[in-house]
Length: 233
Image 1 (cartoon, rainbow, N blue to C red):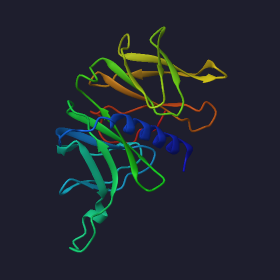
Image 2 (image 1 turned 180 degrees about the horizontal axis):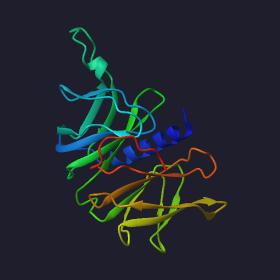
Image 3 (image 1 turned 90 degrees about the vertical axis):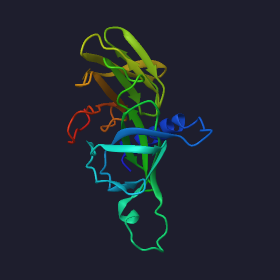
């Protein structure tokens, strides 16, 4: 498996685990809109709920928006298996599952394929009090701690699988990313993240493709953007 996908999947495992530590005392439900975002590889046609499907999604593309009302735990199966008309057919196996956060109305479900042919899903809220307009959410989906210096001299340390919400000075956030080398922070790169049309932006720090810096930066296309491919920076 490609190094980026392997480490991103590991980061999503950590994040999914962190979001799932509070067991529900009773069945809960949510009502929201979601879109599946295919990270790195194509996402096959999936089924969820009684009779709902999401068409196949190309890499670095968001699916059509789905209206969902149901349990907080959302399971997906392969549509080809779910659409079988054989009454003796076994219940199709779950290939992806996510616990949906409450209190949001729009959410992106970032997917990454695992070795077992299943998918890890990381839920990224797109609105609500947890992600106010005029802010940028930083995601560390690498396996190493990072130091992010933003604006002029503001800084935040991100542990693996951690996130932080920061405020830009204007409509764009200047960021400098650093990782520890021999106990010292070493700057890797600088970049700019511009707020989306809704005044928000999600920025992912991911394992790099070239193997030199070990870290890359990816700006998730805003929710209001039409479905299209968006390659990492």
